[in-house]
Image (tube, rainbow, N blue to C red; front, side, top):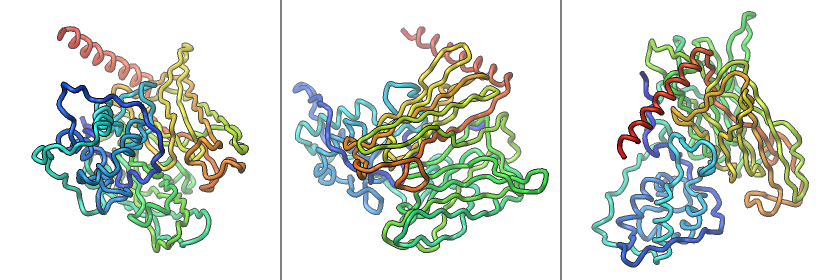
Length: 446
């Protein structure tokens, strides 16, 4: 078997923490006088190293560094606000609602949050310098985000160069390029990334779409391989599934650029590809698609809106990941399953969506929903054009559905593994058997 290779918090992206710091805080719990004093060197520094310094350091993209005590002490109150409201690290899946078993979950543990809050409320003491952990070592080159798990990609496909002007409006660049493969290969992971540092700011999104020859010899769009939007990392396919790339396939890039006041010459967007081992054929095939939510997004000044989308497959599927997509007015999105027997399940909910940080929430191996034939997936999005929306540029004008950065969008990206009836029944039985083993072990330990 090929392991998915996830371990720990390894996917914090290298463009993290340029988001707005929004005021407000939850009530804190102070430390008891009989307990040891919480200090930076012993208690806070390890949390910051593991969760923040990937971006909060010199030569990275965050607006401030969190490497030394003086760095962190300067922003202590703002850090308290952000972590207590779960706005930092910027990972917006609701806590306690729907499936919580997510691979490489960026969210801080509640104990870590309470430790930070208590430390700030106690005056942010430094502590004994001897307790300070060794400095974290960070690479001095641009790395692929999945490289921490999978190593460098096996193959890279680049778009054709495009010069982004300093001024102007939204621009779309859709060149076609060959895969450059000498043989057909099954893929286990994709990551799309813009250039760094210039491309990070001007690429609104980038989607490499797969084109395949039909019987008449014409290239037809088959699926999307990956998608980049601000904050997005990549997609790792479960070990029993894969996505097939044929040697004569083509890639059609859909790169959406938005000028930011400086020219970016000959920009190239890249697709990193990690293959299954040579000769391995997965049992199932997975694809990544955009599932639209229908209805008007007619946001009057100070108004709100809701959209919904529905999908019913004619065969069993496994839902491997969920990514809401919208712009600055998208406030929340949920996905709910209505099973053939009438039972309903809220799978995931994102209440504080932030268009600066698009996440693909990848479900754990034993938590990814197994949906029998006939299941209806209901996707719901909520939009906010009021002054209460901190990302809203102007609550006094109308906004509508459209492709420009200033317009709104309404869809979900879903990675779906397509199952046979036999495969579905076997996966259900195997999952139930593993759950019984865990339950029996827990009972025996009491």
